[in-house]
Image: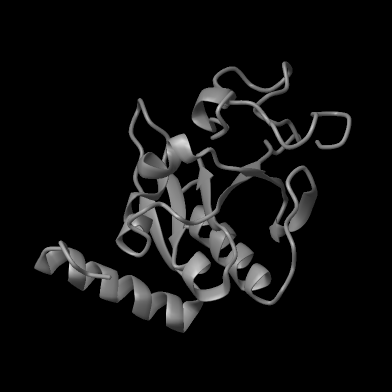
Length: 169
């Protein structure tokens, strides 16, 4: 539905739909600054394949796009990504886990998706990456500030779909 959208929003919505039809999802990279980490998210994966939109936070330009595109390709082919499982082949040399994103973070991290789903009626996951030493943001041994550079987008800002070290990383 495009009712209430201005010309620019309709153009952008049409572009996202065309990209998701061609590539599984459009990808948006948001540049960070000294206070805010960069993040990358998908637009159209839910519409195209019925798989959750994805976001990754804190990765350098290009790496985030590679990760979310790899996720969309594989999820679109039917691979499942249950929260708390770990993948070592989504991006070379980096462990990745998945957590559901709380709806309270949708507008901040998936604003453009609302052009396709104005009521916020889509699912979303966060692709969380470990450090090169395989530390996760919630671990006490993780580098100082890692938990702020890669915040966990749940209501509690901690894993909620699994218990770290018990049934998840």
